[in-house]
Image: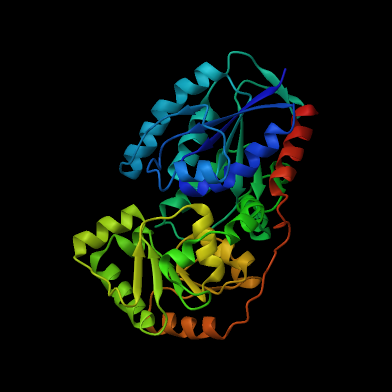
Length: 377
């Protein structure tokens, strides 16, 4: 009988990471993989379009939790996920990344008692095996909600899959046993490489009247950058100085859109193209042809590294140091002088594609292979 594994996704970055995993599980008769969509991101622009473009099968179940405060959303996911485990009785639960869905479903799985025990790695257990994909990343900034989610999820997980070697160092420092940890590469890059050729045919540049290499891209969504009205206005004022030299395309996240409206901010149309969030293929095209990308997103730091596009990260820290050490990422913070210096450096950089260890499009296959060995043994 196939091993039932519930794969949890809830937000835009999760869908990108889960797509190659679902393909991998579908190709192996060992698995009965079922996708659970928590509904943390429910807007079609941040959810359905990714299912369509990445050819992810419809979820087995949708919890439809919607938006709320961190505590409220986490609590609601916990409340709705426990009955799913009771009905499904899975031997494994796989969570990805660092969003509220990750820690919420991880907590439920770690405490849940199945009706029938089973053998795993030489022992008998009555709880589902909890698997964390993209484990070990650390910003060392406890003001980031994602950092709390990462640390807690790693602590309670049985199997931890790491995307870069810094994750191995972090987990060892925290006392996680070596037999629980596997360096496999980056599933986000699996999706990027799988979709890269299709993204090249996106019409987004012509639709927006852009020329390759003649614009920059901006993304902002971190609470530290968008929740404080003064900081948000200061940051956009700084970026507007850059836009006077290089037009900027700004796909506005719904959270950021609300903050902009509250601040009464308007951006000059002659140097800014403010647009709704776009699908995965369109955004990949925008990134790939940009002169520089300004972001506070972790995933975009990784994508630009592989695309060879200079990236200026508008944060004081990053949980993805390999993008600086081997890639195209410049950690600038939000100080005006540092951001402008980083911009000048980005303009002078040669485009170079970087593929850190195991960022080769095969991470999901490695994960499925490791899990197959663990369960078969």
